[in-house]
Amino acid sequence: MTVPYRIHLLGFSDFERNALASYLRLVAERSPAYVLADRAADAHFLVVDADDPAALAASAGRGAQTVLIGAEPPGGGGPWTLRPVDPLHVLRALDQLCAGLAPTGSAPRPPDARAQPVPARRSSDAER
View: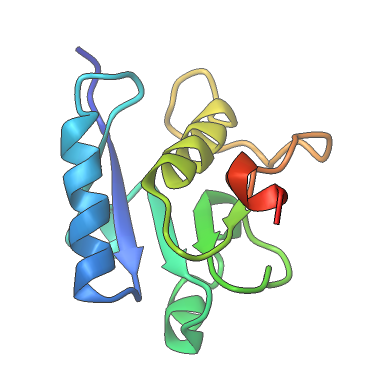
């Protein structure tokens, strides 16, 4: 098994944090795998509540290593997905960031401008 990537959650309610943590534990056997880090400085990636100005400010400078979740897409940063928090979309966004890592896995490469964005809605939402 490969060593899991560490992610840190910035912002979010306790409910959202617990839901994401539970989902990551459920899919721990897949590759790439993810575990929560207690500090942003110890994390490979950040998952940020884009509706929380303090969380956005705390993630400044880590845009290429950040998944944003919120009502509106903020400028810049990494992949973005809509609320409500959908753990599957978060996982896909993290996988997208992992795909941009250098072959050694030590340093992220700049995101490819042609990369497709993470789907922001479930297919059932598009029918409304």
